[in-house]
Image 1 (tube, rainbow, N blue to C red):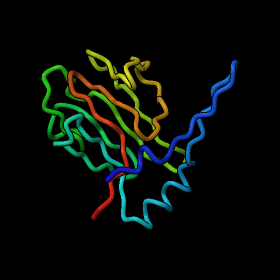
Image 2 (cartoon, rainbow, N blue to C red):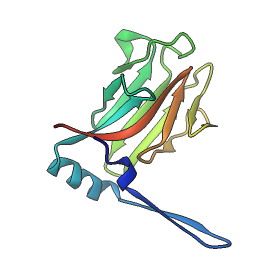
Image 3 (cartoon, rainbow, N blue to C red):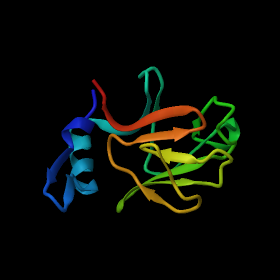
Image 4 (spheres, one colour):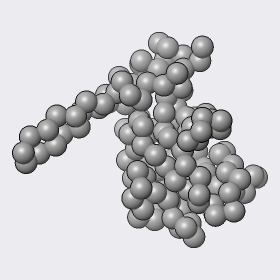
Length: 135
């Protein structure tokens, strides 16, 4: 079960579009109450990587990453996903093929803010950033 679809409301006007999202503190409280955790979930839902607070490294190299992605187009040390008190970011670590968030390539070595439901692409692997609930 995922909280992603429950976290975002969009309000639009002619000139401005504002997206309101739960702040990280409120989200953490809700997750704790429901025994949830952050995760990367593959498009087909078959692969789920549970994430921890702090830095989660993504890449092909098993001994160097907390999230090991079996994809020859993924770099050995591809990206870092950081879950902190101030929010959640992903940083491309200078990978060969880049890191994409919602189809847009992010700038290497610069943290990029993540929101629930964002799609992350490393190599040819696609994941959705979600909250999963233990049932």
